[in-house]
Length: 147
Image 1 (cartoon, rainbow, N blue to C red):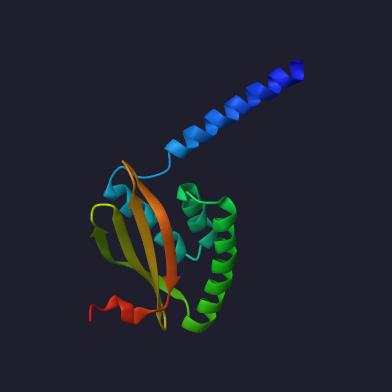
Image 2: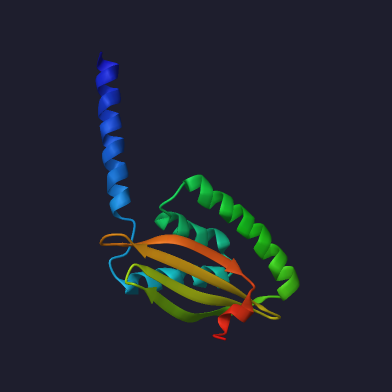
């Protein structure tokens, strides 16, 4: 009987903790989102992919397994990129786009010696907070031009 009571109390505490953590996800203002993305890009420009993904995981609203798998794939892909594109020279913010006050997209590039990688972060505002909904990177530099 005592074990059941302790188990029930632990489950209640864990439930409350999960709700508390969930409330800390998201951004009230666009300024917070931009700062957050800048921090991620600073880590990527220093080749500290693990630290960048620690930040991403802290705001990821979907499965933890999903973000961890993406991290492993990203580390492998960026190792190949370094071999092909050279050393990282830094990063640059390109643009912010807002759609109907519910979607916000930040576009950055990481500059390498021979090429760039485009990074895109998309936030969704369902109610009162902006949530990181997706991110991606590619080398489609032609998409940076408004043609």
